[in-house]
Length: 84
View 1 (cartoon, helix red, strand yellow):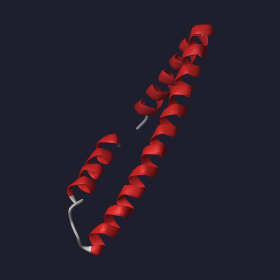
View 2 (cartoon, helix red, strand yellow):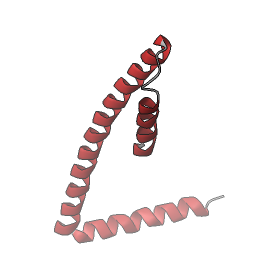
View 3 (cartoon, one colour):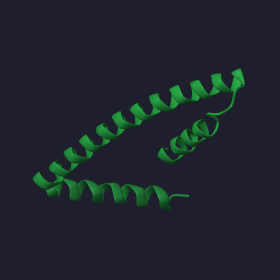
């Protein structure tokens, strides 16, 4: 996602010298959407890091629950995948 935003930002910068009104309007709209998507990605990244830290704490506090849950999930996935 970050790669797409960088390419779109490069497109905005490449068209900065154009004088056509339609290009100016499209450039302004794209720049506005880029700014909003950057802030949205930042919020999602913060939420993800918070959840990863919480999962890490849980695994450190109760490792046997994490091992058991992973084992059961693996069994279920194997059972579903072996069914035809």
